[in-house]
Length: 295
Image (cartoon, rainbow, N blue to C red; front, side, top):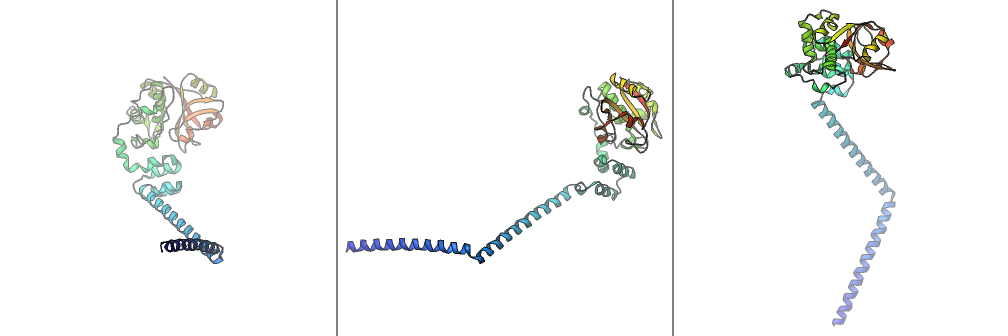
């Protein structure tokens, strides 16, 4: 009896193994047939397309959310061009027309103009100019710097009419290294000593005004060799500019060096102009007068 039970058990195990192998074969064959079934192929394609649509929809939502976040937390004007930025400022009553005109002519001033409503915050801060000054180099300062650009120079802001004090500050810092001086203090010096006029900064500022600062200034002729000689001796050249590449009305710039390609300029109104080199022929046709500034 025991032997029969063992035979039966072996037979059952063999039958189970056979049925399992048969199911595997059938499943494999069925799966292969399903893969080759045109209906199944079309169904799989539809599923893949649905997945791709879902992915594209998800990415579009993420992108839209990012744009909305940027619009809320940043100035939406920064996402578009110059015209959109200016139009955004023009719609506000907080900005004087003079500043709107400034940014229309010079996009570099956009951040300065945009922050005009917060000007009192900058006017209360102590001006530290030490990081702008390096020994042996003429610092490049902008008259529309937020540290002093909102302060008054005559009836206007330094940002609008303070090119003279800003140029003199650059020359003063280069020759003396005295970082207690800045364009705001220089504008006050010009006003207190009568060098500010209705037209802006007077030409005597570059001679008598320089003497009062411990510098030496003299008027020089508009001659290439004369300018080169001043720069070779360690002096700087201040130029009063007529309408042209630098201004529509009047403007002061500083010549700080030269090479075979032209002159290096510090323009207190445009960094872009200060990155270029200017030939004597280009400059000379726009210069009304010029002065050498020495230590």
